[in-house]
Length: 444
Image (cartoon, rainbow, N blue to C red):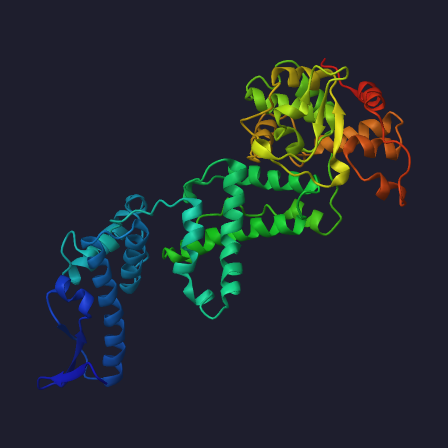
């Protein structure tokens, strides 16, 4: 085998390795030798394979230390070097938590290999490189570079589909949470808030349950593959913040999940004086409007000023397709409607005659509201703010209003409800006001 030759009377093999051009300046040699300690050819081959892997890992780490290499690469190279020495890479913080004997064992093994303090090997074995700090989007965007084997044989379209598996859920998380968080610091609270925001979209029939479930699965997979790419032992990957969050969406995807309404007693607790005093004012008033209108969340959060009619004979908001500065689409033709404002909804809109700029067009209300309401015990764990829409319909049903009346208030298709073409005038704003007045809630 090239790279092995025998020396001395005992015929023991010495391994020889050409130093790749990119490392020669750093190493200071074009070739390195290492005694194998054996005259058995097969054992010598095995030694050279292991030694070559270790040397390449060491040179990579050494070169990274001399160049402006990303934190991600430095960590990965150190992890690879530690693995080539038969060690599991640990950060300095993790090593500090080890027992004295284990720490001394690492130092002794470094000394046995004549590794100097501050060397690439010492950095790798003693945790000299910390976990890289990457944002969620940075991690998602890095996947093609880190896993080229997954897409190299795909068509251009196939590669885009593969990349979107990571980019799409990352983008949704960032938009719904309102920031691009440092990936390893994403906590369970944020993951649950994201799940609940997706659930709200499903309940408002704005998103498929199967798609929402897939987003959570892909984020869970992104967590695993990111840590694997860093060289973290699969058995020691920290628990994913998105673990075991699929169940409610799985039930909705299978068609057997109930679209849970907010119980009346919880609605009363939410609208009670000072119950939402620690919630920001826009989120608080959006919540009041949703409870008393049965509207979809985006229909209220994205209201433009010109669709808010507080000085009309019957104060109301208008849900319609918009263009220009406040451009927005609506779910379908049936969603176009006027919604009367009564009780706490009217009071809330009077405080915000120009709408809700903090949440307009951003999609971040759901996650913020659900997190607050759950943490303060105002909503049952399995229920989200999206349930206010279903509670509104239930209140109308309990008050004796028929299916068509309820559909007109909710923005449902009357044609679909009747199962035939619709003739005659739609429900008037006066008639809608009578319904809203009949079921409005009063704080107690």
